[in-house]
Amino acid sequence: MTGEKITTRFAPSATGLLHLGNVRTALFNWLFARKVQGAFLLRIEGSDRARESDFALDTLIEDLIWLGLQWDEGFGVGGGGGPYRQSERTALYAQSYEQLQEQGLAYPCFCLPGELALARKAQLAAGRAPRYPGTCARLTAEAVMRFRAQGQQPSLRFRVPAGATIEFDDSVRGAQSFRNDDIGDFVIRRSDGSAAFFFCNAIDDALMGVTDVVRGEDHLSNTPRQILILDAVALRVPRYGHIALVLDEAGQPLSKRAGSLSVHALRERGYLPDAINNALARLGHTYDDPVFLEIEDLIGGFSLSRLSRAPARFSPAQLDFWQREALHRTRADDLWNWMGEPVRDLVPEAARQMFIEAIRANVLLPEDALAWANIIYRGPAELSQPASQAIADAKPGYFRGASEALARHPGDFQRFIATLKANVAESGKRLFMPLRAALTGRVDGPELAALYGLLGAERLRARLQSYLR
Image (cartoon, rainbow, N blue to C red; front, side):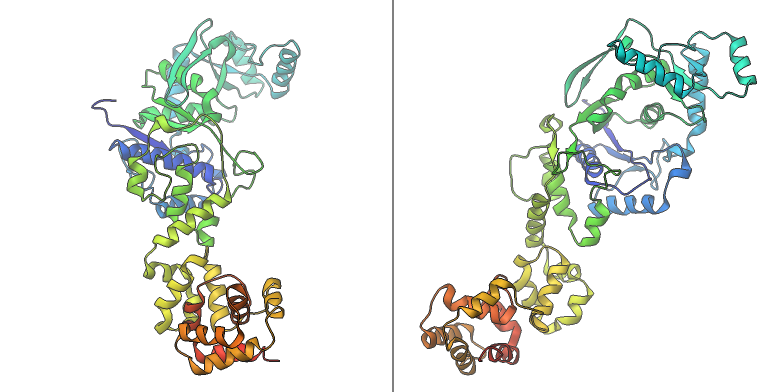
């Protein structure tokens, strides 16, 4: 790679929302490009414009920008390899089809789906790998004209040279070898005229100057076909690297069809981009330092050699861990905006900073911040079961002693606690837990000292006195 400008790419379709497996692929390509001062390209795949969704396209663009994965060339940005929407590149594919047919490397195939299914079934029954039997490989010009006269529209198949072997060095999985005879002639243009995925994908990568393709291992079997295509039309073959898939907690691959969690959904819920990037960067990739990393450090520690061949399993608990780490590092002003308008409507401006710092370690999402704003400024909606038990277990006279301590020290938490301790002769959990339960309806949450200051004497008095009886 010395002296060569590295160009990576992300090529999603606009038929659904980006799930975390998609975005991890984008992140790895972006990190690799940034690590080597290369370029990151965005291409929108899908040769059928009718299947695309404007909402999905707009959302994937927003998702990538929100995550900080800005592209250097491609869709919406421009560059020398456009257009960057596959559905607008039909004329370019037609040129390659014509070239391959002129060379005798592609031919029309009139086989019907049912006929192909029967052939595959027979091959499997005979213990052979299913591949095209070559039925139309040597049709005469007269036979082709006869089929067309009958109204049959052919697909176009690539003629795979017999007896050869395709070998390449995978950037992640090492040396790979595929026998041509196990591949068989494959379709590069469907009978409806649309381009097969691995055909237009390969042509686009070459024409757009992509030097390195890092993608999921489910595309590994496409690679020998793409190498054959690019060699046949005399285009440069990129380096390929195939990463292990991301599995969900049930061990199933993340996918749009399976309804896997989308980046859009996480963004709407309030997850932070740095949390998602830290979580995804470690799914199938190792870093020396297990702590939260800023984006510059994620770039600096990234290497293709650190990509694992074993499947990575996504854990919501791990994402939550990185979310808490990101929240810990978020500036107070940004955290205030993140909490949302409902919180800002409840929390007085004078208490803003105190509220943020009080609950920072006790929230995961904006909905948690709103819950604490409601507890503090409106009162707990109900007691949790543990809180109810803590109040029931309080020593007789506990809340009278607390009310007396508050009357003496309404603005000094430390002196209030010292007086309460003397009044009720308790310590540890039996001193603090009934107080927390009465004030918040919960037995967990922010430090009591911070809550004491936020609640103020009037609210403190009302909540304690409600338990005097």
